[in-house]
Image (cartoon, rainbow, N blue to C red; front, side, top):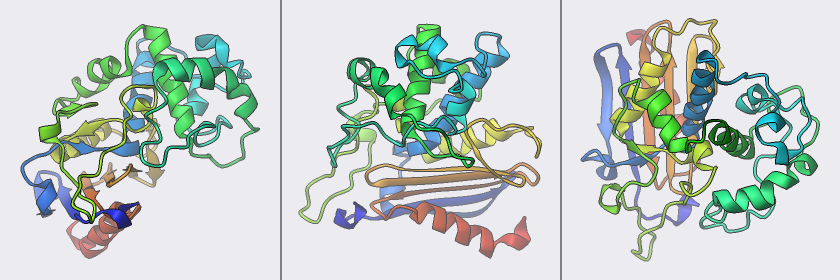
Length: 289
């Protein structure tokens, strides 16, 4: 829907270790605003599960129905299959009809009352390749909350973000810290509402551009090329993820072999623009790796 946005801005940085090779910030990205990370949030949710497993508090291969009995999902749907998009659940639940703010209606209460009991009927046998599912990560979010008795945001801060030294993040930042993207009429375009329900764990995290880069770098530090990177996409030695919500696009990649980090964020641009900017950065600076 970014064709309806008048304002456009891109922030990009390519870093090799401690050396910044390229850095450019568009007008809406200056002054360290809080930015929507979109689906990069999923890597935080996956990391929560991994940290709980490391602490002996969660079995990644446990059926989700043992944590959320009301789902009635078969035993083949485990925490691990939710993390890896292999659960057979669709991308989004039925009833997502508001094009301006599709996740707002799915508060935790409504999700538990209407979506959870319908999950078994929504599920299909998974295909060999992963099938991307925002719904799967919302279910994972509720499972982690039910297991621990804590909210996703409490878990994200205590189990993942603060231990990594990432603090300039939020799920509902104040208006004065949010960049304003305006429509052609001049009216500000509202962002999606994701922090009031379990879709927060699928795409509801906000943070500064520096916090996004710092998070990815710290999360991948000391990660070998063959190590499991829960929630991340893997291409050789590179771990990457992207995200897109109404008017924001994000992309971050870490090469675990060279300590190269590419971070891009866009406002008011088309879906996939952040990925394409990152690809151009890497092509132009291959020799600097």
